[in-house]
Image (tube, rainbow, N blue to C red; front, side, top):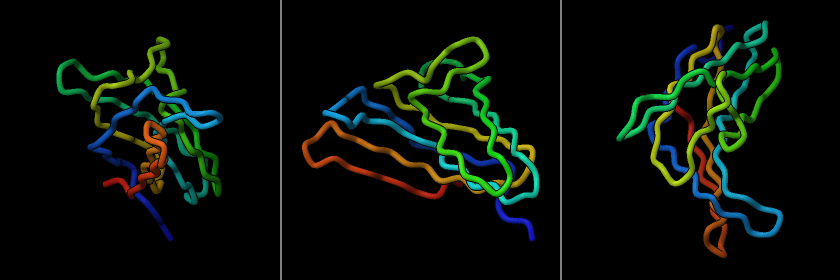
Length: 119
């Protein structure tokens, strides 16, 4: 049985640069891979006012999850996804995967967790 797909889109991304105690605001691309082999994942980041940044890569082993922290990942030339700037993601995999988007916002005292299945 095949679960997931090879291309996913997350249209709403935004990381604020806030830390409260042991918590820091961040976003993650949460991946589930039950395809039968390791998933080679490539992420391209799109912006309102600049060209896309590509070359972000990750692996999700078979029968595993990978929570790809977007505040920590770097691309092939060492670039990071910028803080305080709206973006969207195009996620491609060589095998079908399931993708969920999570955002932890600690900028307010009542920390917020938002999550949704990607498209």
